Image (cartoon, rainbow, N blue to C red; front, side, top):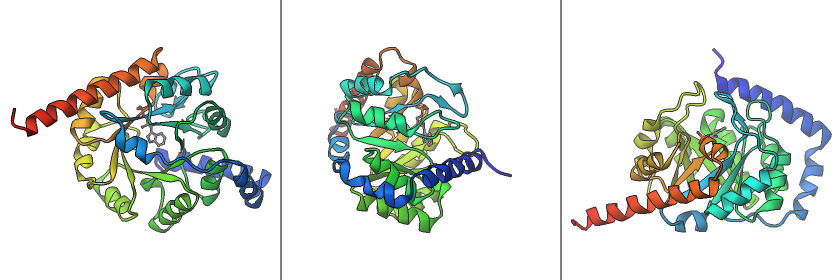
Length: 275
Ligand SMILES: O=P(O)(O)OC[C@@H](O)[C@@H](O)c1c[nH]c2ccccc12
């Protein structure tokens, strides 16, 4: 039976075919020279106080429909940056998430924060496209890729100076992700085959992410308490969409995530010191 993920990917392939017909790869590649070099998000993510927040621009989702009216993604992105986000994720998938490359362009023009193109990457063209539109990171969803393609896209991103966020939601996928020698591994609490959110996916798998690789807890953060749970499980970063686009004060929300994470880490240090 086709899963939700299969359905999304077939739409993505159709839309991609249309864009590629309008702008062949060689012409797209010719545009790369005009964008500045990709930003390295890792120093900022690794040195973030408490937890690195990756704040997402997300208009809708397949499970909930429309989430927020975002007339100017760049304006939202500026408040994310002001709140202390270490990176900003922009959903560019059109059919289920109502995103677009125009949203990515708008955010790129507004902030200097590292940007993640959040989409269902199944073709090298999309990675080149991400860079041409100013993205510094791309998402690679292990469940959507076979090992050979995943390796190719990962290498391509690296060759373009970009960083891949490799996303998993079970132990077998985590093993496949780690074989790439990634710097950033995301554990998604939302199973993309069923759309169900289970934070235990994150708390079970994050402790298995090796030292030196930053583990990103994705989905299901509705407030600081969820951030605390994820940080206790070892999250170096949290990726938050819905809660931030719905919050009238995303800056303050991001600060509250950072504050709770800082407190969790401080008490963990006290605990380790035996106090
Ligand atoms: O809105 P949430 O529950 O905070 O989730 C954000 C992010 O994790 C989610 O948008 C996401 C994670 N992985 C994805 C892959 C494709 C599309 C979307 C996603």
